[in-house]
Image (cartoon, rainbow, N blue to C red; front, side, top):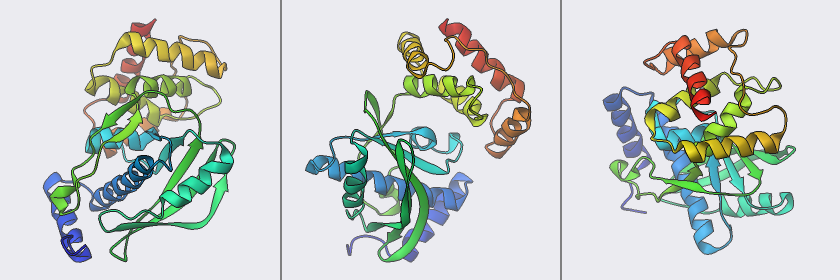
Length: 265
C-alpha cells in the first residue's frame, strides 16, 4: 500500500483533474469510488464467488461517456442469483479491498420486489471518500459491452479492468419502453436515448430486435410506441440540458427520439 498516494495526495490529484476538466470535484470522487467498487466485483467473479454481473442504468452511461453523460444518483447492478443468495454474495464482495479502497454497507439493506437497495460507504486508506446507493437486482445477465472506465492510474492508483455494462442497444430498448409507458415518469431517459444514439454507431438490426423483445416481454403497450412530451417534461428536460451543457434544445431531443423510433419501424 506504500506505493499508493496518501488520502491528501489523492484528494489534491482529484481537485487538479476537476479543474483541468472544468468539472465538479465530487463527481470525479464518485467515479473513482464506483470504479473501485466494480473492481471488487471483478475480483469476486475471477475468484468464482460471483458468477457474473452487469451494470445498467445511468452509471453504465457514465462509465461509457464520462462527463458527456448526466450524473447518476446510484449504481444499478444485475446479478444472476436468486434473492437469498444475492445479498450474501454482495456482502462478501464488499469485503474485498482494492487499491486502498474498502466498502461498508450503512444501515439495513432495503428489500424491493426484484432487488435490494444498499447505501455503501467507501473509504480510502481508512479515510471517508464517498457514499452512494447501490441497487442489486436479481435477473439474467445477457450480452454486455466491456467498457474501459476512467484510468485511475493518472491519480496514482492501480489501473482498473473493464466493466461489463448493458449493451447500448438493450439500454435504448428499455428506455424507449419506459418513455412510452404511462405508468412511468422518466423524462431523463429522453436525454439518455439521444446521447447514446448520437455518440455511438448502433446496429439498428440488433436494436430493433431488442425493442421488439422488450416490449413483448413487458407487455404493457405495443411496439412501436408513440413518444409524447408529457406535462412538465419540457422543464425537466431543459434543466438537464442546461445542467450538462448539452448542444440541443428540448424540441431537438424529442424530435431525435421520435426519429429513432421511426427509423426502427
